[in-house]
Image 1 (cartoon, protein in one colour):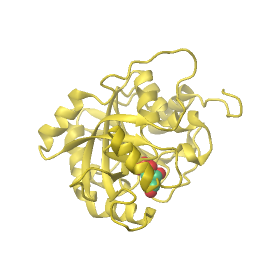
Image 2 (tube, rainbow, N blue to C red; image 1 turned 60 degrees about the vertical axis):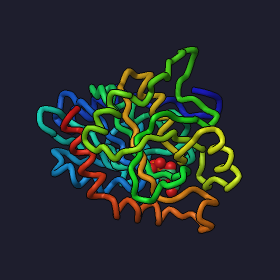
Image 3 (cartoon, rainbow, N blue to C red; image 1 turned 90 degrees about the horizontal axis):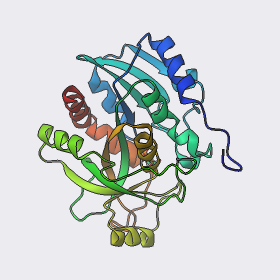
Image 4 (cartoon, rainbow, N blue to C red; image 1 turned 90 degrees about the vertical axis):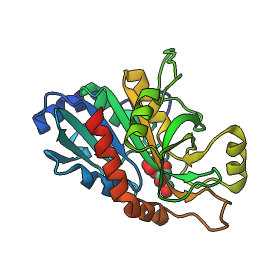
Length: 267
Ligand code: R1P
């Protein structure tokens, strides 16, 4: 581990425990449900297993409201999906390895596809709360990498063009955007929003990019879907708060759930 950070949790040990607890030898796809997305999971039907994440080694209990800290296993047609209701954020202070333990565990459990969702601020003119946006690329502003050692990983097409096209077959109104990850937990200033808009960002939040890099390193194909839960700082003059993020999720739960269910059905 880097100086000052706890040692990386062991994804293979967590995946082995997951196999024991769910009775499922393998999973095919993982979904990480971000802020505002937990109610959308109900559209996936009844899970076959539903465990607290802390039943698996290496997982921190949830610190953020709206992140339920549970892992569900679903059978969807011939496939098995592993759904994380919530995630560990970098600002929770457990180190970057804890942030990526979920996606690394999912890949160790067999998942070839990782779907990362989040609640985010929208920067582009015309974006509105409640709008899902496919992540086309990211800007990592956390100043850290989840990869340890001289392991040079290609991030071209990190957010799979193939999976984005599949999503658009399911819903042809979906737009795409570049997601900027700040470390948080404070929201961005209006000047920072101005800066990242100039740099090409359309979406802003405090997750996803580090997990996407780790999922790619582990060999998974990555799909990222942001739910615009608010307009970014300085765009409306209103202060930002996490409750509006969660409310936007509740308001959009049915649409997001049905989008995910249809995408999963076609993977
Ligand atoms: C801010 O309201 C919180 O919501 C988002 C931000 O990243 C931040 O953690 O959470 P997710 O990215 O996990 O959806």
